Structures are given as structure tokens and as C-alpha cells.
Length: 370
Image (cartoon, rainbow, N blue to C red; front, side):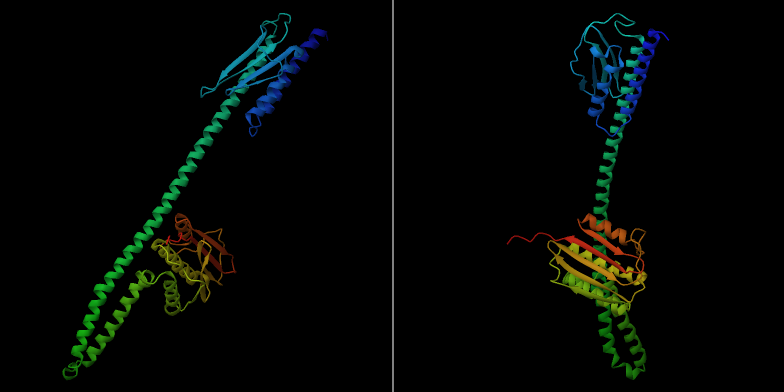
């Protein structure tokens, strides 16, 4: 093998090595572009025929990376490229001293192929970076939209719940003010006829009507409380929870105990309604799914947060799976979403065979200035 042939082989090996190392460097998409370009420009002089007098420059995304001593000279070889977004870049290799003429000034035809290939690799890398950035921006925009839409949906869910509760309250007031009073008036008038019913043989019929009327009045009162308990609006959250515990104990034979520390402070109607409605649905969950004989509610004030804990010692469930939910959709997931919309929190602690504990937390409003 002649010296000329051996020299050509060595030059081709240098060029192939440069291409291989460039490909390896540009495959690392996690490193910053500055590090990649700094490493890449450093390997370029060694790939040219006279590395001892070779310097290089890479322009990439409005920044310039050079080897020591680089300057523009009459003996330069370069390639420029443009990304799809219009961003420009380029590679320049300069001999700092004059060298014998070759195919392109002092440069070999193979070196032209090398720098063109390197330029195409850099252009492809730029395209990849631009695509990643576009995807990242699109993802951030989408995530921001999802967060905003989720917040809107939570606020809407809270408003719908309050609107439903106001409608329930209106219906309950209508039952109390009109139907309840009408039934009471009918009972009063029947009592006026009750004394005379003995002489007409209608005493038993009047007694039966009175019993039916008493049952209807009692049912109307219970229905009014079920729809919208007046105690919540007239006395506040803690008395309403105490009434709720009594209702479950007496009506459903499901013993519920309320434990309250310092008591609940005065709350905005929105928070009081949400806590009460959530507590009622959580108790219904325990009644339907726990298999236990009762539950416990714990109302406590911790710094600037009011917490309501509903726990039972039933069969429990896996919170990671779909937990129990009530028929009207106001289940654990719905409760969590509504409380997030109010700036509150919901914590579920449960496991199969270990009962269930749900802790609701809401921030207390700041005390009013005197």
C-alpha cells in the first residue's frame, strides 16, 4: 500500500469518526444545546486534513461557538442551513495558514461532503428541537386549558349544588308554609266536629281521619327536614350535624355519634351547606356499603381550617379503585371535586376490612375586623 493510499484511508477514517461522534452527540436530547455545540465544535478541526492549523465555528440558534483562535481567513469552507421556523445556522472551518491547493481551495472534495453532511445533521437536530419545543408549548397550553376548565367545572359544580340546595329550601319552605299550615288548619277544624260526631255515629271515622292527618303532618315535617333541614340555616352547622346524627340513629337504625370540640364558628352559607350535604352523603355511603352498625362524625377546628371527619368500622374498600358512590352522583369523587373548587381538601383513608375514614377540610374565613 502506497503512502498516498494510506494517507487517503486515514483521512476517510477521520471523516467517518467525525460523523459518528457527531451523531452520538446529537442523540443526547436531554443535554442543553450549548453543551452539545461546544463539544461538537471542538471535534471538527481533527477531522480536516491539517488539524494543527484548523479552527472551527458553529452558529446555532443565534449563538456562536468557536474553537480557540478562530478567525475568518481566505482559506475557509462553510455550509449554512435554515430550519422550518426560519432559524438559521451554519458550520465554518478555517485554515489559519495557507495550505497547498486541492479540490476546493486547500480543501478536499471529501471534506466538502463531510461539512455538508454535518450541516444536514445539525439542521435535522434543529428541526427536532423546534418540534420538541412546539410539542412542549402545545402541552403546556393544553395543560393550562385543562387546569382552567377543571377549575371552571369545579366552580360550576359548587354553584349547581348551591342552586339545588336553594331550590330544595324553597320547596321545603313551601311545604311548611302552605301544605303544613293547611293540614294543621284542617286538623283544628276536625276537632271542632269531633265532639258532635258522637251523636251522628261518626266518631270512629273522625278518629281514623285524625290519625291519618297526624301521620300526614308528621310525614310532611320529616319530608321538609329531608329536603332542606331548617336547623342548618337557623342554628348553624353543628346543631344541623347533631340533628343529622339523630335522624340516622332513629330513622335508619344506624347509630351515628357527633363529637365536636370547640364547635364550628359561623361559616358562610356555601361552606356550611357543602359540609352538611357531604356529611349526609358520606353517612349514606356507610349505611349502604360499610356493613357496620354505625358511624362517627368528628368536627374540629385546627388553626385556620375546619375539619369534619366521618368514619366507620365497616368492611372498607380500596381508595385507588372506584369507591362507593351514591345514586345521585354526589359520591366521593364528586365531594372531592366540589371541595377543591372551594379551596378545601378531601382525604380518604380506607382498606378492605379496615373501615373507612373521610376527612373534609375547608379554610375558615378570616375574622372580621372590629
